[in-house]
Image (tube, rainbow over all chains, first blue to last red; front, side, top):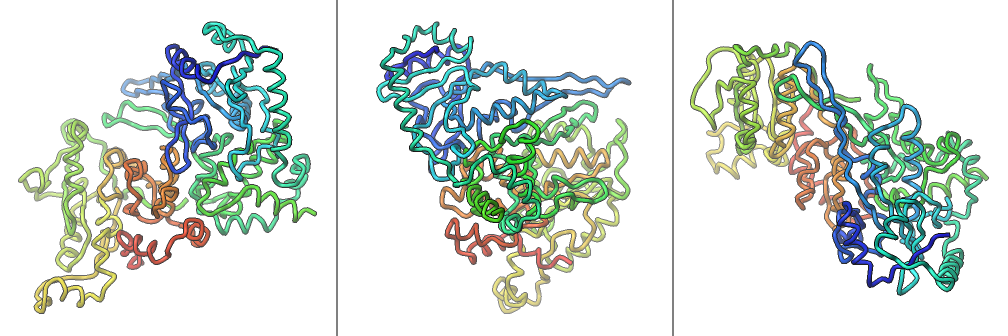
Length: 344
Length: 263
């Protein structure tokens, strides 16, 4: 067990030393109880007590808009050059729900054919987690999917012990940084304090929907024709907010952009959303998910059913972003409860 | 997928060095601000001018052209009989017609005229001799002649002007995004206007502007027109944010009133 201690008053020094080595991103208050991961250079800019950010940290692994290659067709044979901008980046203050989200995406993009842009960027990331000692708000359902406790996926992990942070060192990279700035090892008393804090969390975090998570695959297996989807579909605006803010949604669209010389250009990808009417439309005018109800159903099957079959893991991280951002008050916990009630 | 643009029936041929496409700009009922956007393209304008041959552009040059046009850019809405005749004549001489700016593409703010009885609004503007002044209900260009390409917006968004020009030069259709502005606004990680206590038309308005207004601290006014299948039931949105439905309707009518005149 490798734990170190950082006195809270030294957090600013920690961030500044880190910022000398690489770009540091952390949650920043944007007003109206909204937060976003942004580049910081001091601890004063960081919102340590934040609810999940507008966009999850996936934006650093797969940017909203990304250039894949430059091409040139001015000579007989087309030429292309793959491009990648991947600066060394530390992401500080990542909650356990978002750590889980990154773990999910790591699995998806490691599958063949591998997504090298994602994987090369991932190598440049230095991830520093931050434990939630209480719920961010009522939209979260992290305990349902077991993401309220840390489960790897970070280099360092901070837990608040009042006057100080206890830091779990999880990787070589993390070890080297902690050693380089000379953080003291945690004492037996610190470890006892950590255990006590974790014990208190067990009471504070409870299954948010009163339905055993193990039951969800079975519920979803039989929910294909549920009325719940029609209720949700009738309300949906199809704005795509729920998927854009989801830590495990990764669908994208790819398009070529030709310059005015009509010879050179770039290939770019942009986040896409299964909630858009055009998403499942194909040549000939057929649309596989023309109804909002079917698109919403698809979204939740991509969280609670298909990834369990394929990766043995829920792709809902319980962060609650889809509920918070929904224009039409579509609430994940309520939807799950309604499906469970129907199943009985 | 519903396409809002169609490929040009007879697309302009790929430009040869010696024969760049002849392009003209015309304006109808508008503030001419979209022409200004084109002249404001800056260095990009030089690149555009390298690919086309501008033969008429009232705001920028004084030359006229008496032959056919490869591409015409139409700004403004059609708001009287004279304008209807004029746009038909221009269309007859143009291989490709691009409607640009909200006035041309959806009627824009000129459409607010259609909220009143025509003679009533004419009298209010021109006084008792209003009959001396020709006026019709406001129409976007495509309610009079065929439009090949649309560049939405009030004013038009520079990167989209370039995209459409490039598509037109290649004879390819340009598809206006049919997702709401929220789609792009979220990618830009703006704090939602509704969270700030402001009613914004982003959830119902076509994207493609990269949420330009919201990025700069303003709400979406709906200047790009509604998505083709907007959410019909906004009760949850209205109740979540405690909105007044009449207020939302009035906001829509600012740019989108001409929708009612579409066939």
